[in-house]
Amino acid sequence: MKILPLAALTLLLVGCGGNNSPANVNAPGAPTSPSLKVLETGADALQSRPPIDAISAYLDGFHFYNGDQNGQMEAHHYVTVLNEDVMQAVIYDGNTRDAKLMGVEYIISERLYKTLPPEEKKLWHSHQYEVKSGSLIAPGLPATADHALMKRIANTYGKTWHTWHTDRDKNLPMGIPALMMGFTADGQLDSRLLADRDKRFDVDSKKIRAERADIVTHPVVPGANAWEQGQVIQLKRVTGGGEHAHGETHFAPAEQLKKP
Image (tube, rainbow, N blue to C red):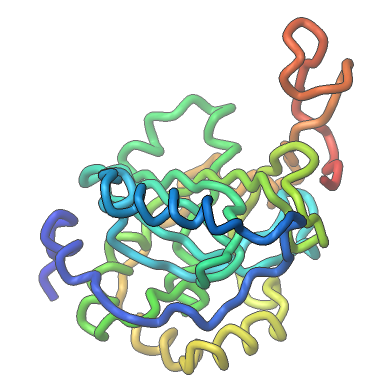
């Protein structure tokens, strides 16, 4: 099968598959007032949103906290293709209107990943297993478009930071960002999470795995998935009481995960 250029592929990425995964937490606060609703409606009608309009794909997969493989959650990615080598995604804890923004993921090609400094490579995870296993899906896409998209993603690498830990009953974005990783082998992902996702989207991960058997993946570039070698990187407070207090707070990689 011919692999379409990303610019052309984005034209195919129009489908359904949303509005079936509610947010994990309810943010505290008073109901939206009529005046604020009027402002929202007016802004929606009058203001342009080029960065938001550029989002062209929806991917659903799973992450875990770097250094804590039991800290697993579903992640809804809304992806913008910047060019042939770089994509970026905003990540939510659901796909409904009130979904909470959990974090971001930057996705780069194998070619670019190979150019990164050794210490930088440790922050990134591979996507080979996620694609081949069927745990990463593009809800609503026709089979042909899904297959073409997954071919483009299979050998890419992602760097993911979560800023709102809604899987841990954090009803506000408290704590510090956490570096996330992707699964690399069978038996790592909680089967209950996968089964629940498959049921909501009416998909069969085993069938998807079989359909992607012909997708060629390359050996993982050394440096990625550093957690597999016991190299855990997370932020932790060193001094001071606030993440943004200039001259008072510093961050350093933690030798072991400090849960948010």
